[in-house]
Image 1: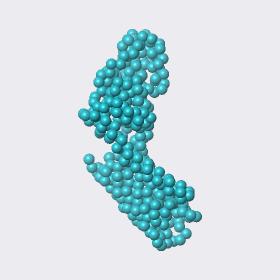
Image 2: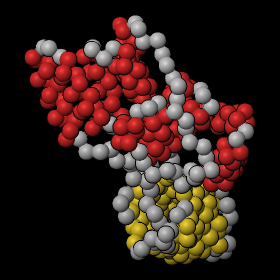
Image 3: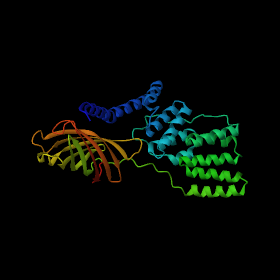
Image 4: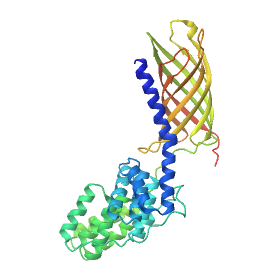
Length: 374
């Protein structure tokens, strides 16, 4: 890897980290402030800009709430469906999904999905009004065809709402109640789905189908309420102990290190640690030995999977060397969080010191202990 490429890569890493940790929170504050202000046109423009093609399920769910609030019902439903496809157990997705179902008059199903409000969502934000959303449902065959397509596409929230309209127009059709029950099951509204199967059983005449329906109802009644996926650990105030190793290719030598960190989370996203280790593999023994230093690390959860976090760390380290011992390193990484630990991967770039312009790939395991602060 030549020096120019390394320098560019380091610069891009720093820019990316600045966007993740500093720019994105500011953007979030901006569009939510506009929502509180009631400036409808500005709200739509801002949300459309940042959320239209998002791969963040929480933001897609939030966008669906905004679109529904503005009367863009079909677009709002497409966004909440998108959010459910990305992560149906995300707490924000369940909260906004519940709010949208409530707005369409489906209180029982909404109650099964409801979750605590997101931290930023307070009484200053408007509640969704009851939606006056009517469709021409006289063509039963055509409506069932559309609903089946929606189910195939996993657009379950839209399917639930369409089936809810269809059962009102065609209350004597067992097939409609059957489809409604299945769509409710797919979003996790099991109790409401079981009640819907009861109505299906009252209309069905085929004994074999009745028996299948009874078994289906029993299965629904045994289902546990949907639980949101656990978010990343509350780490503020907790201590950490890390042990790992890394490799660094410098010139003709492949260097290795074993290292540890001991520190504390000062916030839920930032920890500071003392750092120590042993470096070896260099032909000149002056460059092998004990290293000591200080390190800091920022982390931000990724939308694809709550336990996975993007990290950005920096270290001030004293390397074993005949001269130029002090080095400054920084670089991105990933951490997969478990119950009280994490598996960590880092890619560090040396910006100064004897290893300047080289990179180190490290992996290790961190244990978190102590009581978290509120």
